[in-house]
Length: 468
Image (tube, rainbow, N blue to C red):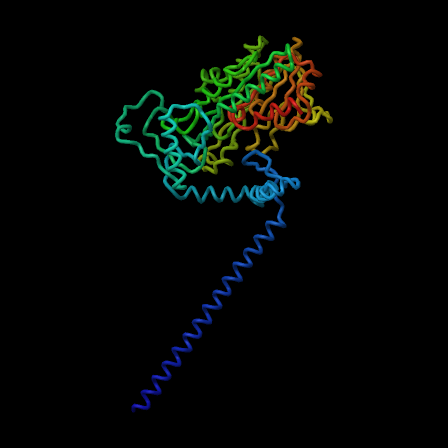
């Protein structure tokens, strides 16, 4: 009996050992399978990154993507070349538009939500001249957002909650929001938060003054265009942005024999109209029209009324701010896109940015086969060309516009004001601008760009095209 018990015990131990061996083998096989699957996945992804076609343009962001950097030994040893390669691969991932859309859908399912306001990212200010209390409030808020790196709901104090509502809904202290990028979304409107830089604004003014000095008797004007943050930002979030008006006033104070154009005030009178797009970082052409009207009045030239234009409206527009923010509230709430076609007689000629190629074209392009996110391209179709509009005005006034993309919408509004209009994008022009303007016989020169360009980095191109 005792012998049988020992045999049974040995059999049980042998069975347990077999189970243990099988279990270990199964675990090893599963681990091996996981390693093989992961390795295969990485190989497939790597192969796709190499084989699949990389995009050159982002439709949702309406911009050209990073290009492969040109090699130089100085760039290589400084790290600029390898950094450029990294930027190229990061910016041109195959299927990037679809991945961004999936990411936006997934992100929209998580985190705290507010039906009124969302702020995408931590806004970064430059060297604005603000009082210490305002700087401290912003620094504390930005530091907190940077530490958490997650969506943060800004709480309303009990004192604020008890405040009586004001007539302007933007003054309501009970508006709440989220932090996750540098674009605020309020009532399905995207608002880019402005950084500002007084020192850059001073340099901008110096570069514009240099054009006046070089061109002598030419009338030179500076129109620094405000953006939606000046008109539609809830008061509660004013500490997250610099003042565009203060930055524009700072620029104007350094202008020497250059006439400032008050686009800020002209737009303020019409802030309840559709002067800016909800889903795009550009202004609406109606806003450009009012700014152009202010310019024409200052320059002493005629100006056609809005009723003299053909109004065209297209539905289903979602502009660049969805691509920048990935916010589904913008994607799911498209808006109308309206532009105005001048009825007077004019011809439009385009040149390459080095002034070598010449071809005829339309001032306003046909949008039938253009993706909605790119409808702002209706004005001249591209920034990378020089445009000449010859009109039937016959007043001998020849205008040159040095601009960023904000300036595009101004051009059709001025076909009833100048005999000739030449349009240069400061970011792409490849010949000496002063010499070219003298060759054209320019009588008036308008610098037209938004505050982000005038106080950011684009303003440096003004000096480049003057001296190249």
